Amino acid sequence: MGPTTIAAEYEGEPELRILPEHYQDVIAGDLPAETTDVLAVTQAPCVSRP
Image (cartoon, rainbow, N blue to C red; front, side):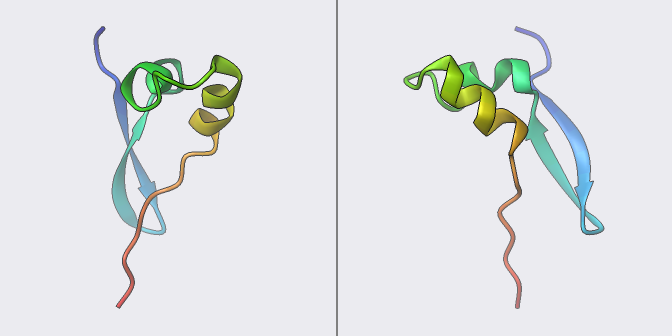
């Protein structure tokens, strides 16, 4: 499969994002491609703020 993530930065903090072309395979194999295509391009990090 090759690399499935890319390092990015969000609000000055590092994060990993799943490459859109691998999103369905990695996260949501049971969802239709039409759904995972949208999810893949709208990924957002989970953050914890004090």
